[in-house]
Image (tube, rainbow over all chains, first blue to last red):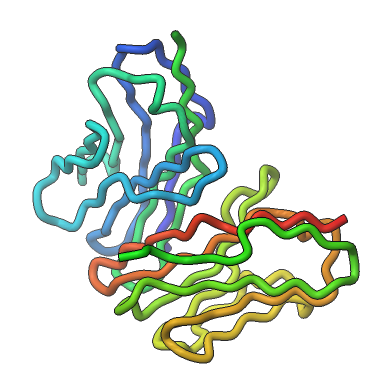
Length: 112
Length: 113
């Protein structure tokens, strides 16, 4: 069965510093992987997705994620954090059917 | 593309009342999902439809909850009777086929007093 583990329910970084949000997945078949972002009082917004093409996936707002099969990881990074990046981030996995399994989320805090 | 549309955006009701949440998916998407989000339980999948047919309703909490999708452009989630523990944000999402990418609506914030 597919599953997602996000390490750290809260992550704090200083403005301008590297953002690294960790995600490990479990899947019995080559997965589709996603990162979503949720700003306060809004719905989840697709940040980026991996669909078995390039292993380094670029998304919106300067974020990117790298698919590492050997580590079953799909960590999200951004070189320089901005105050507007403060939000909750969800990693998700799908085995190609309709359902997407979401992680529990990581709340990103940006320190001035 | 207007995205997924949900109404109402906010709903305040009293315990025992019927609540109906509405969703219009993105045109051309063949799957529709209802989620509930709370601080305590996070994001929970309640039910999803494929081509207007309910496929998995194992996440529906109890018989007080029901969902319908009479056509490809409309779905409802009904709670009858509502209880304070139903207070949450309810999201609707629709999905394109492979890859199964879900797009979320803005949510309905429900408060049951």
